[in-house]
Length: 190
Picture 1 (cartoon, rainbow, N blue to C red):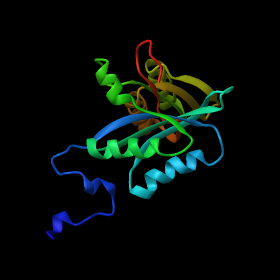
Picture 2 (picture 1 turned 180 degrees about the vertical axis):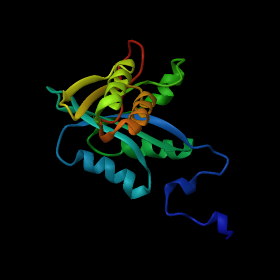
Picture 3 (picture 1 turned 180 degrees about the horizontal axis):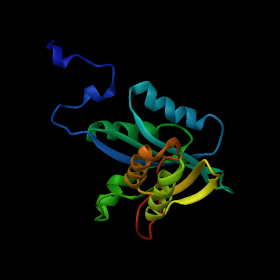
Picture 4 (picture 1 turned 135 degrees about the vertical axis):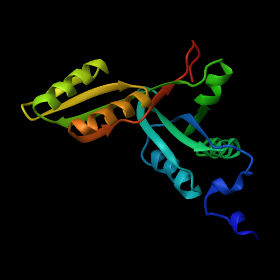
C-alpha cells in the first residue's frame, strides 16, 4: 500500500480523494433524557468525526424534547454517514442537515448566530478604543469597573471572530462562546 494511502484511523480516510471537505450544520431533535448527549458525542468521537460547534437546549418542554445543533466538517460521503448513524440512535427523532436544506431553499447557508462574552482589561486610550469598537460592533457592556469590561456580542461567527481579533491588542483577557444556534429561513419547521 502506498504511504499516502495509509488509513489514518479517522473516518475521513473512507472518502475518495476527489471529494472536498465541507462545513455543515446539523439539527438533531432528541428526547431530553440523561445520556442522550453522551451517545451523540460518542458517535462522533468513536468514528473520528470532529465537532466544530455544539449547542444543546430543551426546546419543547411539554414533549421533553431537546435540539442539538452540531457544526461538523467532512466530505459529502462522510456527512451522509454521520446523518445515517445519528438517525439510528434510539432517542433521536429527527436529523436535518440545515446546510443542505438552506441550499434547497435557495440560500447559501442557514441562519446561524453565536453569543460571546469577551473580557477586556485596559485603561486610558485602550479603554476608550475598546468601548468605541464595541459600540461599532453593537456589543453591550454587561460588567465593568475601572480596570475591565465584559462585553456581550451576538452575531455570525465571522463577526465574533473579528471582534475578538480586534480586542486582542486592546487587552483581551478571556472569551466564552456559546456555540452556534441555527435554523433555516421560511415558514417550515425542522
